[in-house]
Amino acid sequence: MKFIMAREKRSYHHGGLREALVGAGTAILEKHGLADLSLRAIARAAGVSHAALTHHFETLADLLAEIAARGFERFVTQLARKSEGSATPETKLGAMSRAYVGFALENPAVYELMFRQGSKDLDSAHLDQAAGAAWRQLEDAVAAIDPENAQQRAAFVWSAVHGLATLLIDKRFPPSVDVHGLIDANAARIAKAVGAN
Amino acid sequence: MKFIMAREKRSYHHGGLREALVGAGTAILEKHGLADLSLRAIARAAGVSHAALTHHFETLADLLAEIAARGFERFVTQLARKSEGSATPETKLGAMSRAYVGFALENPAVYELMFRQGSKDLDSAHLDQAAGAAWRQLEDAVAAIDPENAQQRAAFVWSAVHGLATLLIDKRFPPSVDVHGLIDANAARIAKAVGAN
DNA sequence: ATTCTTATCTTGACATTGTCAAGATTTTCA
DNA sequence: TGAAAATCTTGACAATGTCAAGATAAGAAT
Image (cartoon, rainbow over all chains, first blue to last red; front, side):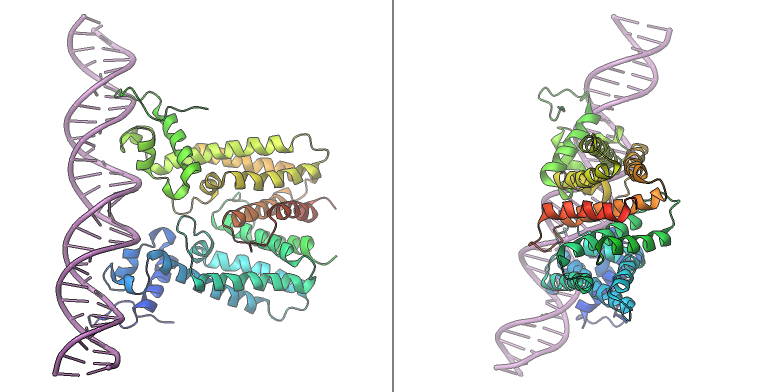
């Protein structure tokens, strides 16, 4: 999709600034990382003054929350797409586990923003809703194998994939490990620990 | 231990500023969180000007790296203490899994600094050494159960405990879940996925 | 003992950040 | 057509990390 990033014809009113801000923020996030994602950099990229956000987002955190929410939506879509058509609930959970880590590695900065809000307390109705949908998607996949204790088992799955994703993004493992092998083994062990027995 | 936090007798030279800075930083981290851990706040707490760090740490990141390194050392000590005297390698790994998450929940800000360096690129020889020791401790515990594929199995264990720790710290689970039950179940499933078979 | 050198700390400046208030401009719509 | 609301800009503010230049103390050398 295409955003109006910078105006050639300088009209006082932008027209679609809210979407442009989200687009500019996402672009900076993917190109330069979370550290360089400042309010003023976003405003510059959108071709607008540094105080123009106020009327669309109360604060920077609200804009970041919106970007994170859209990240969760893409996340849910991608996991659904990569796990559809699985033969069994077990293979579906395996596909989701791999797709989870895959999304994080393909979108490390967005993933960082989605989870590692850290200091900035991201919160918005949209973000809560999108993150909730992601959680439900995972819990449903676990319950499809065996509905008993699904919430706790889903929590384990989430821990294992989220932990692997963040450790890989931060390059926390010895350089000798095979990343692809790690992702597959992770999914297999998750299935072993949480599958029906 | 006790640090010289603020000087009553104003002598131009502090005496033990390096240790005082580490102590003041740790105190702020535990009392107010990572977000409030600024260079100038540390200097104020140590009763010293904002530019006094230069001669002890090249940059703020170096001071944070030192704090993180000491966090890893406490971490290793605590895991060793809480898992010593286990009857079998399996129960030892279980004790370590629980102790891992326990440390993170008892020291959330320090744990955040240790792992979630995020934007600030923490790195120092001391930090690398301390973090490496932590990794080796975990890998040894896994290898004691079964030496085959120990590195990959240890990576799975680390993912599961680290993921659970961070998700708990960030309160990412539905409020209905029982935290203590989650920690125990996590350890049990880890053993199931990674234990000898 | 006195001087020189080095280590340590302070002061002041700089660019950058997010937010706020006040003014300028455009659109809406009554 | 004109008043009200929405939108954007300018300028200020405090706070941040880093750097340069100067002040002070401690230690070594003669």
